[in-house]
Image 1 (cartoon, rainbow, N blue to C red):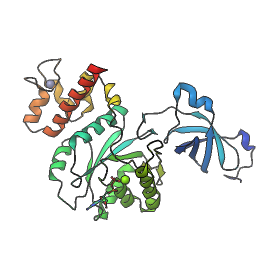
Image 2: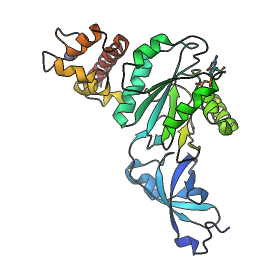
Image 3: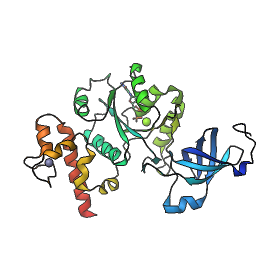
Image 4: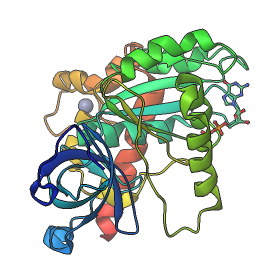
Length: 305
Ligand SMILES: Nc1nc2c(ncn2[C@@H]2O[C@H](COP(=O)(O)OP(=O)(O)O)[C@@H](O)[C@H]2O)c(=O)[nH]1
Ligand SMILES: [Mg+2]
Ligand SMILES: [Zn+2]
């Protein structure tokens, strides 16, 4: 097979690509001139215990027959364990207006992970046909995170959301049943069967292999579906310095400058700028509650660590 109109000696031809999926040591890699099935040198996998993830940018040798051999993994911007994905630009947090009822604390935790990893946060409120999500808009409208509402019965919501995803790697996350797969189908109907199959596979899940797959949807845009609230592992949070937790709440942190005490934890102190901002209604009490709960949780994990 001749790709890209080239007839060079393929064994020497190095290409750059992006891993879409890895399974049993076989990686699906997207390069400028097509999709390759690649293996990799065990040497690079062993180096620093590196696991090649969906989203990784790699160099590989083109074997000339649609297969390749990964020789190096380029530096990552970030990586998550569950789902196993690298270089995430944005976490799209799907929050259902109802059925299931939203759990702001879990949403808060996801937003913290996203901020920690340097990925942006996008809140999409689904199932707006069931109830008007007034309260959710109230909570998240006071954060710097962009917020959109959607419903599978209002396809006109799709354009705005697609635009924000354009050119990025976006991971869809949120509670199981919140409508992640449905939203993906609404945004990118051309993926329908693939995404459906993916979530099927995960539901039957033999709990050993949870395959994360990036789907290219054109224009350098990629999306990954996930089965439910993954990434909420306590270990990830135990790495956070308690003092710095407030900086992971970009809606609350500016008010920490007004605290009376420099060692204020913003959980219960008198003259705490953050608590005063909550009382004035400038930031959401729900978000502050999530902060306090996460603060206590991390503190107790640290105590037993
Ligand atoms: N009424 C309504 N139901 C929805 C909407 N989006 C998803 N659902 C339903 O919610 C259920 C779970 O959706 P699914 O996309 O599988 O959720 P996931 O687990 O987050 O991927 C399905 O029965 C969907 O038909 C919506 O906008 N409105
Ligand atoms: Mg799903
Ligand atoms: Zn304070």
